[in-house]
Amino acid sequence: MTQDDETRRPESTPGSRARRVPTSRAERRRRRLGGGPGRRTAGGRRKAPQPGKTVFRVIVASLLSLGLATGLGVVMVYNNWNGNIDRQDLAAQLKNRPKKEKVAGPRQPMNILVMGSDSRDCKGCGVDGESTNGLSDTTILFHLSANRKFAYGISIPRDTAVMRPTCYKADGSEIPASGSYEKWNAAFSYGGPACTMQQFEQVTGIPLDNYVVVNFGQFKDMVNALDGVEVCIPEDIEDDVRNIYLKAGTREIKGDEALTYVRARYRIGDGTDPNRTRRQQAFIGSMINKALTKGMLARPDRLIGFMNAATTGLQTNFENIAQMADLAVTAQGIGAENIKFITTPWVYSDKVSSGIEWTPEVAKLWRLVLEDKRLTPEFLKDALSAGDEPDGSPTAPVGGTQSPSDTASSDSESPSGSTSGSPSGTPSGTPSNGTQTPPPAEGLSASGREAAGLCT
Image (cartoon, rainbow, N blue to C red):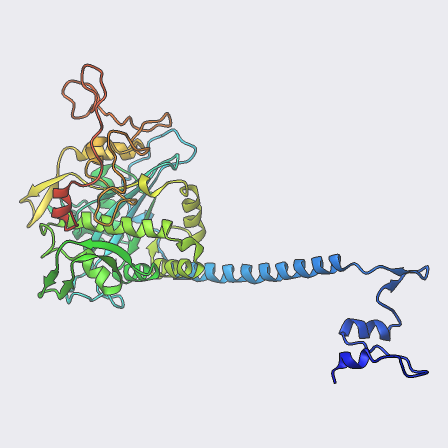
């Protein structure tokens, strides 16, 4: 017999009376205190129970508890990310720095130099059996506009011939300038990121705001945190010398396979460093696209994993994670299609072995950066977008219309029809009779994708 059966015993027995046994803790407490279901007021009347207020208090208490727990978690994660960063301010090692030009905009444009170290000293970095004394395998200038409406990355191939300027060590001593042309990435081996930054500022005239150095291990961990990045490999890659083996097809790759893919140079494409750079740009674009569009922001586990990977051992002069986050918040309105990647214009050169050199058009490119203007059609025709397909082709046909990234606006942006390269003095795409012709299509051509080792 249950307790409820006892409390509902029939009253048919003469003189008997059913006794209700208090079963809840609150009710038993009220019995001990002499109260009933309600509470007596000073005048002796019972005050009606107010379950709504009780529920409200429970909800508020629960939310406060959850908020405190969540806040504590955020602080712990934030402190962990800050602890991951290797912050090094290299300003004292940069001399004769160029000055920023004044531009119209609610904020200042940002120029961030991203360098990829090819050192094999980090855990899991020796994937190809090679060893170096620490060269900058990748150098990308990332320009963020003052109005936070567009951004672009400019890759400098590591085999670019350059006259390395005088660099400076942390103790102030000099690293003598080169007496002849050297490859771009040699500066990193002589004086680390400070020397590469000094070299960049002196040969381009562009002042840098921040820098970031990423190693192979960080790169792999970031790809793994995204659960892989989609690529399109046109044909099998079999490099017995460097132990690089990749099967053809469109699929997501991660770990060592992702690292060997972006580093592969031989047996894929035309084997040149600039076209490997283009393949790296396509991969980075796919990473950004997946992070923005595949729900990573709705998956705290993936987001935290990605940030852990991105910050562990990250060398930079950003003050902390909060400063990076503030910058990211100001740029959150930039869509993937408005993040462009291009390579400095180049031709083959014998100034260094297997080298290249910049063409005169590079001066126009640096001027666009200094004046905080969008890329013009002459550079967009070879641009990749973070919103492109894994093979480097646009996600949608551009036809005869300009995308928002190409159109001019009144906020100090460059007109899409620059007079550069137009012998008649009329804007590109505008014949002398005044009629408009479609602008050149963005992205790489089929031949360009083939040379870069991307699917066509």
